[in-house]
Length: 404
Image (tube, rainbow, N blue to C red; front, side):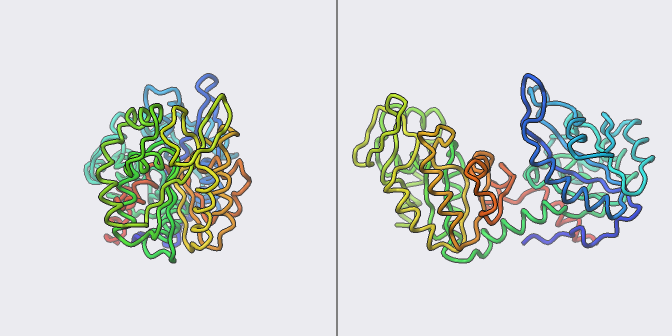
């Protein structure tokens, strides 16, 4: 578990607290309305609420989208969802923002403008380099404490994530703390057996994660599904058929095949691939054994035999990580595999951690939210953590703690 200060280490009454959250949300490209406010409410109901109740003058820093993208909008809607009476000013560190901060009373909450309107926000600098920027220089003197609650953005060395830690006493917010505790539980010394289920439509990081968790004796088994399952089958020499091999080629992941082959030799029996698959024929589901490949039809799910085998392993597990659905669950014909695997995880006696937008969507759709040990809202940060990468936002908090 990383060593950083938490909100328990500070008295917030009457203090100006800059809190960096990740309330980046799905936006309707036409209406520009927020489609999913889960992240906003999560921060609002935990860290921001606690700061307000403890008498802090809370200043919220956040981003939405990227410049030039349809979801790059101001944070006015986000502030309204956080509740009343949350104040909002469409300015990041200019005169309007600074005046609004100075006028805050104990317990009040102010949301500043989208931090990505500041041109150097996304520059990858050290905390000390960012601390010299106009953004940090203008805001830091007005504040007493910095709280980083944006675990989902902690893999980025951006100004608002790391810059304030170099010049202000800094702590992890409740969501940051919660995420790191849950992730440490499945990545440092997990209860054995530990099973990692890797699925989804992207396979770029699959080799690196598999290598890390097997080499470091974190996972006992890796169960593959989705495009990752297809890639690992290809690494075993299985010809999936024209449309499926073409998809892997288009994704640029066939270059990982030799590395996957080496890993499978190094850890025999530890990486499981599907035994059967479901293809789409005239809009309908048809299951075929792997021995029946190649196929001219697109593969969209795992089959019943695979579900049975994976379910047995999940049933014996004491720690389970799920990253990505095992099929195209959005299509009801191909929900079966994801449904059965997530139900097995939900009914398991072990501690389970589920992450990634599509996986969370599937968990919600199936009504299993309350039966999962922990649901991580992070995407890229979660993947990097599972690959053993150091997250700049977390490292910056550790460094700040070492100075106290």
